[in-house]
Amino acid sequence: MGTVVNLNRFRKAKQAAERERRANERRLRFGMPKAEREKKAAEHSIEKRRLDGHRFEDRNSDTGSD
Image (cartoon, rainbow, N blue to C red; front, side):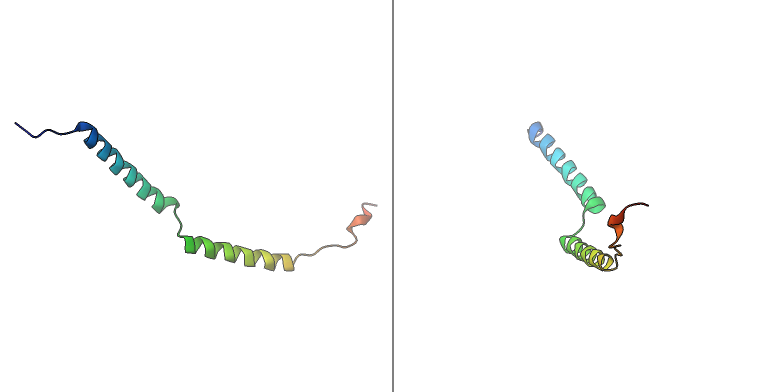
């Protein structure tokens, strides 16, 4: 006779392996390392400040239309 196998344990191990496989796929597809996220945020901040510095604001815009 064969050995006794706990089917619940087998089923749960199979589900855990499937969840881990899906998690790895999602990490590759959507994941971005923390250092890369911070670098991108810093670059965005610098670019925003640069653009704001070049903004033209008309100081006489409160006169309205003619």
